[in-house]
Length: 184
Image 1 (spheres, rainbow, N blue to C red):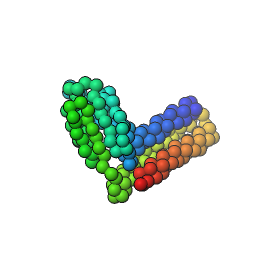
Image 2 (cartoon, rainbow, N blue to C red; image 1 turned 90 degrees about the vertical axis):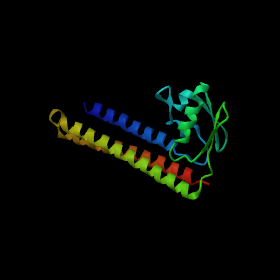
Image 3 (tube, rainbow, N blue to C red; image 1 turned 135 degrees about the vertical axis):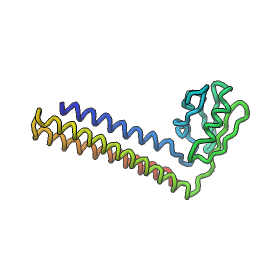
Image 4 (cartoon, one colour; image 1 turned 45 degrees about the horizontal axis):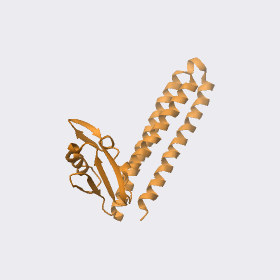
């Protein structure tokens, strides 16, 4: 039973680390990256649809991204969704066939803003990991009467180690992203 709680905790914390790494990918660096547009939802026939399901994304130049819709009737909606993207500041235009997204050069101030955004996402992930730890600790405390105090105490020490490992993984990903963002 304790092993089940710890396994479930590891799985949830692994997922929290994966989510924050995906979130870091949506914050742009100096290059146009198709991953920036993973979370863009396009109003396609009345339902929000991820951009990747509606179009192919190509990166021909460092700061340019070409969005080629599979269905040409979705071109206007794709363009509208890209124009309304927060924190992008890109020039978006379409030529009737494709949507061209040109990202501006990042200024030092903009890079610092992005670092703040990334730090906020990292803190949210740390809070998520701590909440998972708290719930798991409650589950372990509920098992005290069945398995004994010593077993629960050992499991709690292991839980702390698991939590520390995952928080360290978030911090390492944050450091890498900060270096990437501040690199000119």
